[in-house]
Length: 190
Image (cartoon, rainbow, N blue to C red):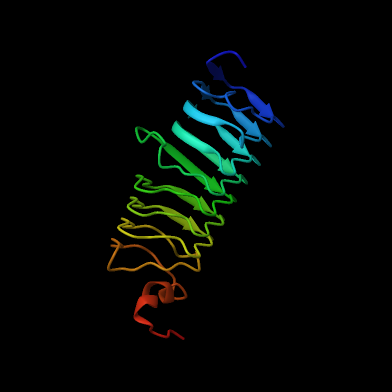
């Protein structure tokens, strides 16, 4: 992997070393069962890439560009996404473990989180306009100064969101989810 630009490649069962991906651009690549836990993500670009069954647990992600990226069944426990490149980016998660991940102050418009565990995720100051949370566990997730206008929480559960500290215009919630919006008032909903 000496080239700085890799196109349409498949990487399978690879344990990437600390500097293996620094300063590289991957386009149209697929990563299957790869381990990135020892990597330092610095000035890395992923364009139209797919990740399946990969481990990013506690990985340091700095100045990473994610454009048209899909993560499926990946572990992002305790990963801080706050330093990802915010220019022309798009990435989505399906069946991923995102417990204790940090999305502090990011623009995550139209982001999709499908069937993810998101316990204690930090969305403080984030823009989640039109984000889609499908069947996600949001227990102890932090929503403060979050813009979640038109966000869809309908099938997600175990969240606590204060409508007075967040923007929720036209956000979608289920009747069962109302208790998470009213918790601070100590109202009992049956």
